[in-house]
Image 1 (tube, rainbow, N blue to C red):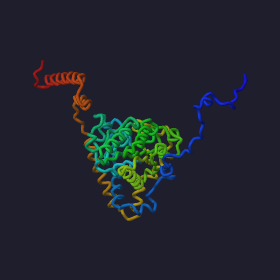
Image 2: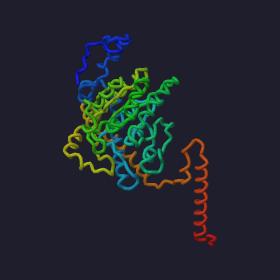
Image 3: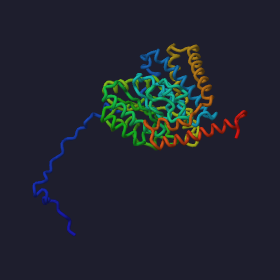
Image 4: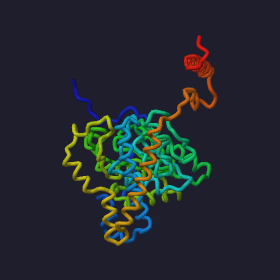
Length: 394
């Protein structure tokens, strides 16, 4: 065979249908520079920036951190006692949980993952209601509209598109609402994460994404999930700024999230915040973390504990004394005692609730099933009445 020579014009060129022209000089639609995250995680505690922090805010955050740590310990104990089916602890991650709840206004919405019950409690949700899902009594356990807290999401990252949809709808209606969506590092590997970021950036939706990078997606370390320089860098690809922050520095997380919420509220669009933290305890009570990480690694992070970091700052500045520490501990113990007492009481459950809150209007099939169950319950109650002492018998 002879090689085809390309010196002669093609058929399209001969017909005048093809006019090769040089492409225009390509320019990015957005300068990526301002979208890039910090080279190092942003910190406040232990730096000069801490001197500018509001003392009242720091003391309030300290009390909430102590309460949050006690909440985690009590919920873990309830799991061991069989009062909870499962509990995904946030011990070591309290700074992210507390800051996320604190930066929101009353009209804003929080979209938590299954690990973020502490954020929901810090937002104002009754601790018992926050744990009802993990107890196995209800699908949610609380009215999302009352506290503007979306249902705790067990499927990874599915709450993120919901947050974007709500935020976008609020903006279209002219409502002053910001949505803050929480997700773990494992959730960033889900398609819902990428779809949510893309829609949020295109629509410039007033939403803030908080990624709690605690090092592991159950047993999978971050380096086996992504080759990105950081998870915060992922925001650049969608056209939103990424922020990288020390997730155990509650003052830094609070400041970064406050700025992101303010930016979203003013029409600046979404922000992706990656908070570097660590999951001190196992994934859940069903997990054996010793199979995939060494205790030495855990101890390094214990030395970077969020409560200890803030306590050191407050003490050095003369803003916290022994009396203040004890007051925070006493308040936390009061909360834990009340939670323990209420969770130790067996709940009164109505089987007929199975058919409630499924559809706005029950389907014919549901009505039929409800009637069948009601008949069975009435028959069982009648049999019990006959069998009791003094009953009519049969």
